[in-house]
Picture: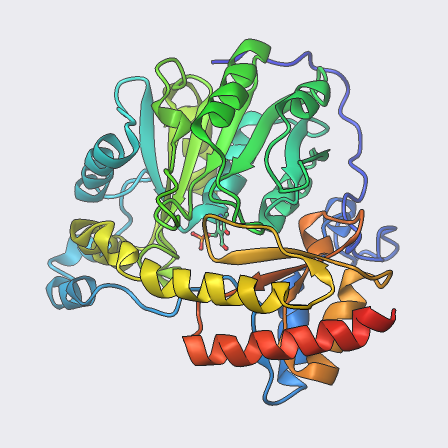
Length: 417
Ligand SMILES: Cc1ncc(COP(=O)(O)O)c(C=O)c1O
């Protein structure tokens, strides 16, 4: 296990986001805690409200897929419950057949040999896996390094845990800047957080760069938390790499996975993590308290989904790739924004040529042009005006219509701002 950072006196964390709640000074007994007042307000419900108030809006907003679980997984419901035991609490780390199937999958697909140095813990989704990991490895006032833009729920979890999210810039095409990450390390740093393929940029980090980050974490006594929720979603033959597969990575690497995108499983709430054996006792205490165990019925269906395998998600890649190309082509024909070239996930993260802030731009795109995106400020990107465009959930015709509206909206609003 990495060396513990010196235990300096915990400091109160500062609001780390532009969207932090204005009620930062708790004044009545019924206000939220000061810790929570520093947490950004979830952006998806805000955008969803604007969409609901504007009938006919096409949403290029939420990061979801168009499909549900494999039919084989749904068919497995016929065999649940099998006995009274299926109505009782199960093991904290997940039911044995699912843990065992995940170990096999991790070894075969990710090159991660789980035992004996690590273990798999099934959770109610990847977000809970991250929250539990943050609580397990850090004390209030400790720091987590986040390449910007970051996945907002990771940053929120860190602030909820009373820790500090330390933003670090990425390159112009959103690749990691390993030297900038190294420069951001302080005695309070506990972990570097990476996501590849990335939400919100779609960037896929090359193996060499992930090895460099993982090695840096090993050398400096930090954890490397790596989120692979989009592991199957890469294009143009771009390879996916799991840093947990590196020979000496087990003691300091926490790998996070989710069935939400891969298997159309978002409502079933199943994710899992590979953790160093040394933090199992801490994770056990946390998950025994905040979840006890992931819902048995969801684990049962997840087991059948894992049996179907990666081909289920990959079958959707050609259609997603067609939309990815269509969006780039349409935007590059004249929208006032930089359009980088994502090779993974199902997002574009546009740098819009405007002096407007991203929340205002997003609201105006919805209300005036009936197309929804997610403001980049929610992902910590505040040096310019960014928006995230998601194409995971729509058919080609709707994407075409939506991107047409986006080009016209950006031109009308940003072109004049
Ligand atoms: C990078 C990343 N991790 C985790 C999640 C959430 O996964 P889950 O639904 O398993 O909590 C998302 C959802 O958008 C995501 O983009």
